[in-house]
Amino acid sequence: MNTQYRCSDRPAVHELYEKGISSLEKAQNMYPSVEAEILLAHVLGCGRLEMRMNADRRVPEDRAEQYLSVIRRRIRGEPVAYLTGEQEFMSLAFKVKPGVLIPRKETEILVEKVIGHCRSLPEFEGLDVGTGCGCIPISILKHLPGADAHFTAVDISPKALRTAFENSKMHRVDDRIEFMASDLFSSLPRTLSYDLITANLPYVTEEEFTRTALEVRNYEPASAITGGKDGLDLIRRFADQAWRFLRSGGLCFIEIGWTQAEQVKTLFSAVGQYIDIHVFSDYSGNDRVVTAVKGGRNG
Image 1 (spheres, rainbow, N blue to C red):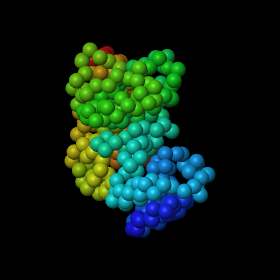
Image 2: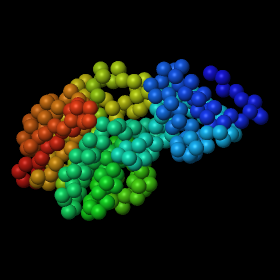
Image 3: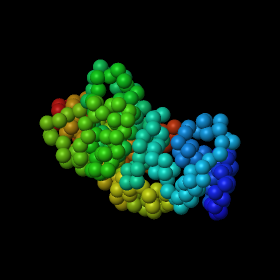
Image 4: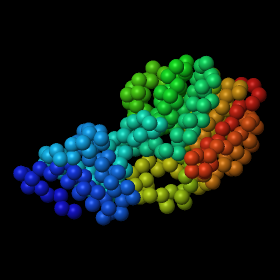
């Protein structure tokens, strides 16, 4: 790809945009026009609408070279979210960086189910396990601004926790979330209990991971994606331990792989501490979320 411009040759915005589309198309990118626009707006430091309205504006050579460099990185497979430093989730922007899992659209169904459940609660305390960039608890709190609600968010990754804290500050809910380093529930005092526990834990099998897109395999943290041979290593531990931190009648909300519903329901049922175990589908019709209620007395 020719990336050289003469010093006096300041390309227009639309020329750079078209060059980005062409380069991505040649690399068989699935969304060349969308990604070219997102990346150019990022480099120019403006919104996509503003960029379109100024399509004839001339771009300084250093910015043009920066854009073409970003396009080359995208062609090599680097995710758009890492290139721009953010990802949209539940109509909110979240900071993401290499080493932190990029939020997926599929996880929004879990957040929507929690919001629907919590609208009838005057107050609640939640725990988010494996919080990553913090998109689940932050989105819940942002969409329930009037609720008397507080979350504890845990993750084993210091980088993820730092990113989640930055996001909580950016969305002004840092006074309603406490962050803690923990391998699932290991660092939590047994005296703590919650009205609900949310989790999006690794659930991709080792074999499935070998077939994921190169940009996932080569750039995103495998430890946040793969859940062992059957994909259920962490979900198995979660089901076995979560009830101890739920108040009687409290709910678990956990994301699953689309083929795992019956296995996960069996895991929760076998523990003997949960009732009303249900499966919910995402907007593609795939099984995506399992909920379970803690029955009996507090553990």
